[in-house]
Length: 113
Length: 114
Image (cartoon, rainbow over all chains, first blue to last red):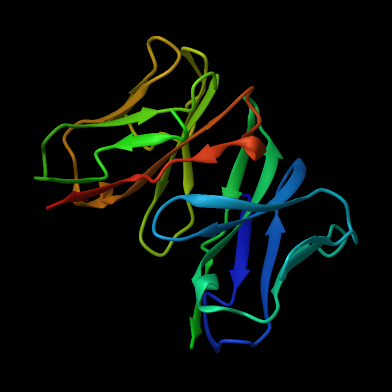
């Protein structure tokens, strides 16, 4: 059975700290790994990773994928209170009908002022 | 519309009742997905439409759940004889051509069955 495991499940840090969120996966017919930020309800897309070792970067956020060890990390530097959210990792797989996503449970990140 | 719109944003219903949840995708998006997110969990796939047809309904948990998209735009997720375990946020996403990685999510409908 396909699975995506995120850790930690929750994390509380102070503004300005750097955080690293982890995602490991076991998925048949892997195509890509995605990170989403979920505030309130709608997940919003952050990164899509398909190749090992190539860092994707957007401002204070960066992510990298290791397809040999089957994991990815999401780094956030100089955290701000607006970074507080649930961060979801999802793996895209090739299914019988269409490509799909298997999500992890998410990491609930709280940034304290 | 500018984004994926879901209505209602919140729905409270009694156990055993029938509910309909609506999703208005981004105009022109042919692919539409429904996901269900229970408290403390990630979203779980329910059904995927390409145009009017359900290309993959393997995620529907049982025959109480059904979804339609008769004209290839708006979709309705229907749940019969609701149970307390159906309480969750139901998310809809749409994409232009079918790639889930390019999909945009709506704000979801929070369903509470009491």
